[in-house]
Length: 221
Image 1 (cartoon, one colour):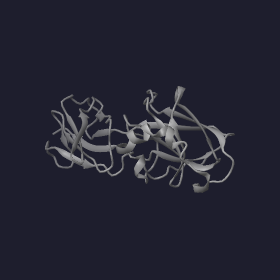
Image 2 (cartoon, rainbow, N blue to C red; image 1 turned 90 degrees about the vertical axis):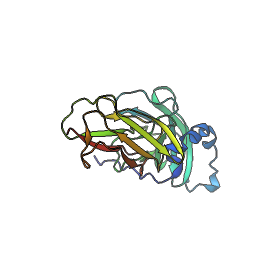
Image 3 (cartoon, helix red, strand yellow; image 1 turned 30 degrees about the vertical axis):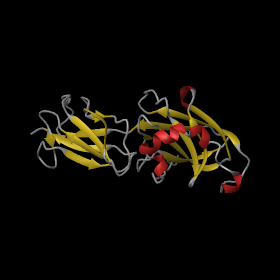
Image 4 (cartoon, one colour; image 1 turned 90 degrees about the horizontal axis):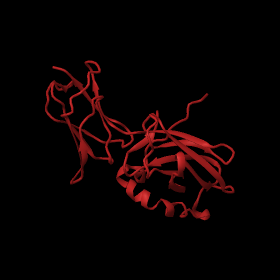
């Protein structure tokens, strides 16, 4: 079977920094497409998209699905029961995109990481998309020993400090916001240091793709 090709994150409205606006305007967005402005032809069909969280966790309540063709939004609305979403869309090869204002999400396994995937959308073929949360991850080069809970993750965007926290024992932190061009900084937990610098000095990473994990590498001295 040919692997599905995930599309690049290339449109600014899909970044988590704009997610709140998308969620608020999702119902309106689903009706803004005018036939004369759309490059897509064909009679609209009732298509169905089902989202599944890769880890089995519950999907964010505000999860929104967009069907896009190029820069044109063909439909956008929030999911309903059990991750299901449906709308009237002209059939064809379109991008299925996912957005949440409370938890940065992406298409699971997408390479490069993306919130969109190209699918053949039609009424005859229900579309299933597996999604996962974007995380701040500490890769431990000295094994998988649990981390103490005294690390500090700080996220800065423009002149604002966004909600941060600490890595869990598995070395992961799930941010509520991760906009493009934000900066994620980590103060390592007790007994660990950064692999590349061999120090415990705070290290920062720029967010160049809001759908990709922010990775740090830790080791024991």
